[in-house]
Image: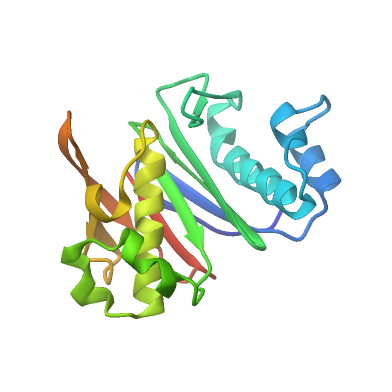
Amino acid sequence: MPIIKKGEVEESVHFAIWQIEEEADTLQEFLNLTIQDEELNSIKVESRRIESLAARCALRVLLEPFGDFEIYKDKFGKPHLVDESIGLSISHAKGYAAAAINLNGPIGIDIEHEREQVLKIAHKFVHSSERKWVDGDINRLTRVWSAKEALYKLHGRTQLIFAEQLITKNLDRPYGEGKIIERDEGVSLYKLFLPADTPLTTVIAY
């Protein structure tokens, strides 16, 4: 079971990162998947299917103390436990998967490899207040992108314009801040946690 990092952000917020070394069959066995899973079967690229399985495995490790692992997706595609008092989120990138839970509310997690392509799309997600800090730096741009992906997953309901409605700050610290601006519901503030010593950029929003 290659959990390479597992942590408690606060008493109610936990996360785990899984380094993928297994084949699909091994991961399915860990999950006790003995029936056909429609969502997994719809993923045609094997590497992506393995990543999705590994993310579920990381989630299962976090949920073991609570004994409930039945998941469904709402009409927006956001995953939930049958026990809706526990918020959950998963993410995966090449070679890794991650999961996070919040015992007291919504949560979002995102993991990202640093890639030069982020420079080409920066104008699509960087808010005017973030431009000076990112200053064309790939590491900082990746942090902003990952933080906004985590906020988007936490929100989980409607389309958001990343460069206008999602705003981050203090991403050079372990704890940053995130803001979601909605036309009807106003402004919501969230915490952003960036764990140290991870193999790729990781941000948890809660």
